[in-house]
Length: 74
Image (cartoon, rainbow, N blue to C red; front, top):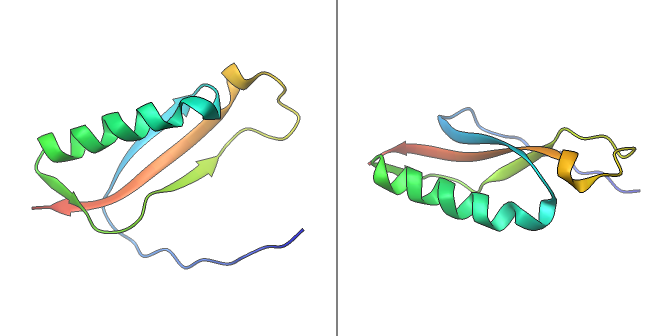
């Protein structure tokens, strides 16, 4: 197994806690993108995800993911 260290800068983020299969994440990204635009924000960096579900969870409906979009007011 390989690992990588990333340095994340502190910033305002639009975020969502998502509970469902990973295969549906695209729709969450679309909705969060729409919210950011509607509320007058802009993206300032790439989105990232934090997976809260451990590898023993066998039911995709119980997968939990935090999604972060670093943003700033336009």
